[in-house]
Length: 278
Image (cartoon, rainbow, N blue to C red; front, top):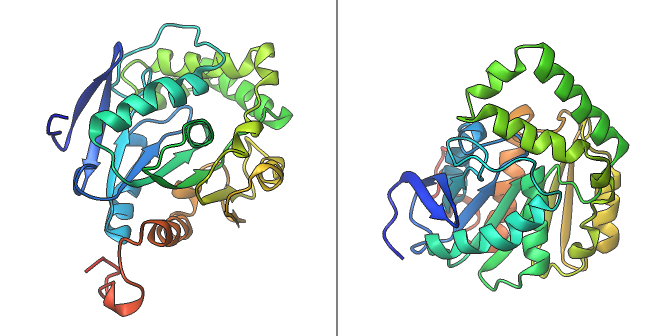
């Protein structure tokens, strides 16, 4: 593996994927790899990766999947199994390329689903835990309705201009995601069986007011997971708890990461007054 710069692009398959590393490289320290939402990107995480680095002491690696951010565009329409392809074809290559040795996947929405597929289908001894923020395991009516509303907003409001701030190829990003979810055949998408094969601790963070999913997703996880499972419901949050309730989200993720990676000691010996690792 070649030495990685703090930010840049990685060539994975036919795509150039933008990335950013905060803290030590993945081959040097425990690392949190962050997988963004269906319309997300590396930049759209905001300062949450930096705050996670400061709170946990672990390195943090964020990247934009193909079709998002400044990464290469994808051919449209996306295949309806695009999340499985990301989890089984792209993510293993990326983890190997960055020298991933031990760490946690933190995924949001589509990214959480990709993380679940990976953990359930790839028995990776390097993976010590999984954080899923607003995950989807099946398609719900409420999800389809909300995504249909976004399509109308994209076509009739300034939503396209807002998203263009985060995506170099904004139409590629939006239509790749939106058209897949609104395809009638996508209603049969179901990854719940993969949950039974996850062999690392899992934490799920769900906003009580999530417009894209209901507590059915949590019920499925509780029914299917045999691994240790923690569920946190945030009443003050919707689909993006790390933006809507950042302090509570940071605390939950930090406690979980500390427990599974043991990156620092408990109590005052492990933290300064500012809450940073010593």
